[in-house]
Image (tube, rainbow, N blue to C red):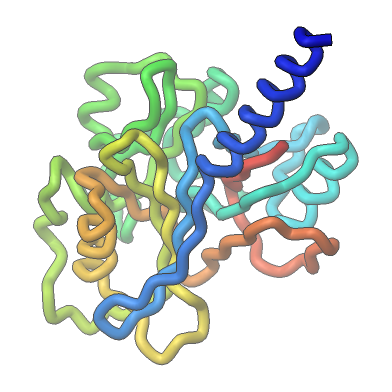
Length: 244
């Protein structure tokens, strides 16, 4: 009897800890509204292809798949930049399997604005590093996504960003907090003033991050605890999710 009570108390404690590990905020900074979601690396999953090998593309498609497995979605956000057909522009690792290789080619656009980088999770925790560093160390990642540019690298803002830039756009990104938790950030869609890249990077710094990565732009979305069926809308490559 005592043992059973101890088991119940232990399970309750684990459930409370799991809830406490996730945190959602709406923050206004310098005239721009940001939405944040904080969680521990072990709770993060990354999705691209369904069991038949077809990209999920939509939050709604992934939601239907996960609900069919009796799983509850706590969080979804689109991952890094992708090419036609929903193919990631660079490295993609899911469940320890490399599904798309690291891209070290030159090119134009945000993805290729050097240094770009990789967000990855291994048995040590979550990290954001430059593509060059990832190629050199070749960690055994559980999941990884390459995108660009790096917003912050060892506390330094990307050299190409300018304080007075008029490049105010909707954006999302990911950073690592001092305690090792992962910070997902997205600007509020439809607001009067978005952030330029310098301000977007500075937001991560203000939250305590030393390393952060740009994920994508105008198409970006975040969903927290969706309970009703989602409507198909934006077309994505990869999708981050926290599920139970």
